[in-house]
Image 1 (tube, rainbow, N blue to C red):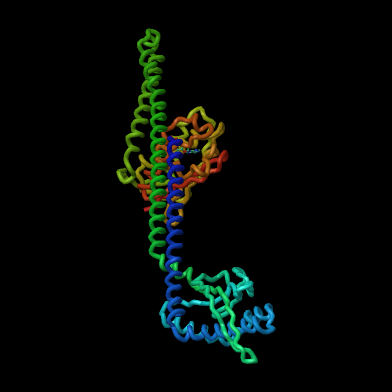
Image 2: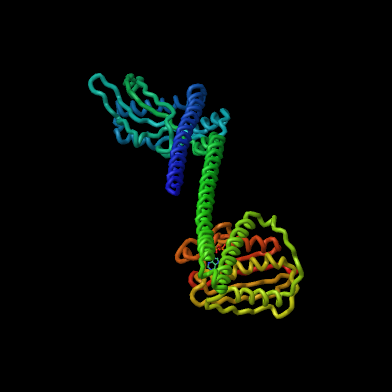
Length: 462
Ligand code: ADP
């Protein structure tokens, strides 16, 4: 059964993990899709500015003119390649600013609702010549020439579009001779949206919340089912234990009864009145033991609310003195000392004496049952405000800390060490607690393994 539950738990955990991974994968995919859609949407909006807004186009054209003039200088004058690249890399101040301002105005107009940075880069410049092409700037993905816009970090951006164009340019030199050359340029437009993650996540908020809810719900269901399963297994175990215990408990008096009744038929017993009397005594004791066992099982099938109390007024000193005396008498052939420390003041208590004595005796009997060779019990009672406290301590085997909260449960028995040797049904403390609860009181246990146990009962004084 335990193995089955373990397999079930492991399977459930694995299934949950698989479900979580699938969900995570789906969420990631949706995230990627949403991101793509968002970037496309933004690219389109930007593309419109680039293609349709006259001022922007004009500024780009002015830049194009300056660029072509520079190339012309390089091609026909003594402008060095490095110098040309340097100028391109550095000289973009005023024009870039104008372009940037125009651009941002347009971005605002398109009401996107978030900020965009935009730039144009040159990736390659080649001067075309029928004899041999001259690569002025070779394709460079890592270190392009930034020309217009905001110079944000290259890695942060996304490509919006790219263009590759070939054109010619003609300009007259100082002698008035027109000189023409052809060139090919590759440019790419990039954008950067600082808040894109937040925007995409916000667009996914519904999905994320629903996923989290479903996940929590499945987790809750899983936790609840496993907890219930373990609880049911525990109940089943407890019931099996109880059946084993009761069978064992019933067997002994029944065997003794059958032996005793058989011996009553023997002549030597019939002839001796003393032996006859003895055997009858055995029959009587075993009979009442059986009766007590059955009573215990019967009464304990009721809950605490069903206990009907027959309360009477008693004086604490007399009550405890008499009951402790009775108990001491009932325990024979044991090395037992009971220390009494009863509240000196006379306190009137209203209790159902029969039931309360049963509860007391159950605790005291346990102190003997789970005691060592020499048993010491100490009973202390005291009045505290309007409560009466009864403390019963023993020097017995003690109860492991993790088992202490379970000992008041029906049929529960601590199953470890030498406790196995002691007879019981696991009902004594359960019944004691029911009785004390129905008196409006409480019972608590403190115990040190191998040192002893202390039960503290508190009942209200009315
Ligand atoms: P039972 O004695 O029939 O087993 P109880 O309900 O009286 O059932 O006690 C429940 C369990 O609590 C016992 O099986 C025992 O393991 C533990 N226990 C109770 N009283 C003591 C005690 N004084 N010292 C050590 N263990 C105790």
